Amino acid sequence: QVQLVESGGGLVQPGGSMRLSCAASGDILSINTMAWHRQAPGKGRELVALITSGGITNSTDSVKGRFTISRDNAKNTVFLQMNSLKPDDTAVYYCLADIVATTNLRKWYWGQGTLVTVSS
Image 1 (cartoon, rainbow, N blue to C red):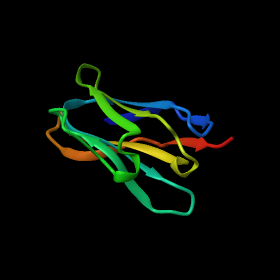
Image 2 (cartoon, rainbow, N blue to C red):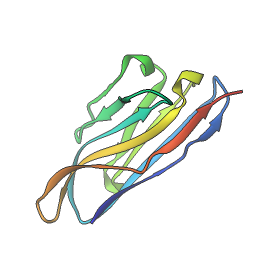
Image 3 (cartoon, rainbow, N blue to C red):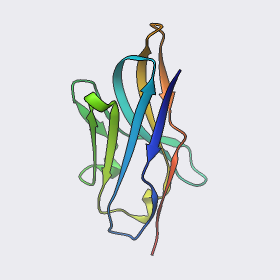
């Protein structure tokens, strides 16, 4: 059994900052790429940022220079530091991880999602 548990989220004013965390736990053999997606009200889900096991990162253009993805491999945790937040960043944020379980089964796992609301 593998699960991803997110923390962080909530209400923040425009221009503010927030940090999301997501910890993977369970019968994990290894974790490859980790990522954050988001889904804004009435819109489809989009990739926000990803980080490989080697630390290579990429992010969508709309968050470049404002959001930073990082990970702590020892703790199986991925972070999303969000600065200069805008109302358009309001969304449910989901973490994902490409995990090989101890059964040697490899699949993408999703967190339950955490709501980030940017509003004054």
